[in-house]
Length: 225
Image (tube, rainbow, N blue to C red; front, side, top):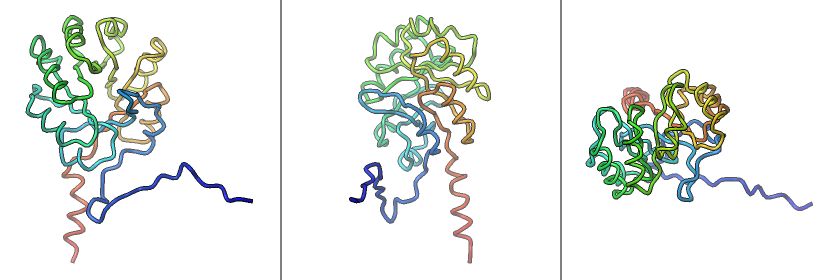
C-alpha cells in the first residue's frame, strides 16, 4: 500500500542566528481568527518593543501604550514590523479631533486597524469610523458597555480587556452579538487563554515577557564558567 504523505506537515526555517524567537502560546491556534484584508489574525503581541516585534511569531502587533499616541511611534513600529500593526489612537486622555487626525495618519502610514480606548464617546467613535477605511477596534472593559450602540457608531471589532473577568464578558457579548469579531486578552496561562477562546474570542492579544525577563536566562548562561 502506498505510503500516505502528511500534507499538513509544516516546514520550519530558521538560521544560525535567528533561531531563538518569542513564540506565542500554541493554544492560541485553537481560535478561529479574524480575516482582515485576506489575512487571518489569531494572535496579536501586545507590545511596542521593536526588538520583540521583530523576533516573535505573532500574526499581528497590538501597539497600544499608556501615553498620548504619537505618529513617530506608530511610524517606527509599522516600518519595523514584519506583520500587520493595529495602532492605538486614543479615546481616553486623547480624544476629539486629535484622535480623528491620528487615525487618518496611522492609516496613511500603513496600519491595519486603529484601536480606541473604552472612554471614547460614541460621536468621536463615529467620526473616526467615517474618516478611515481600516477596521476600528473599540476596547470594552465593562459588562455595562452598550455594545449595540458601539456597533451602530462604527466599531468593527471589539477588544475585550476586563482582567480576570475577560472570559465571562466575552461569553456575555458573544451570546448577545453572535457575529461581532472579538479580540480579547487571554492572560498568561494556557487555561485562561483557552477559556477566553471557548467563551467566543476570535483572536487573542498576548502580553509577552519584557526584554529584561527574556535576557535573564541568557545572562545566567553567560555567567557560567
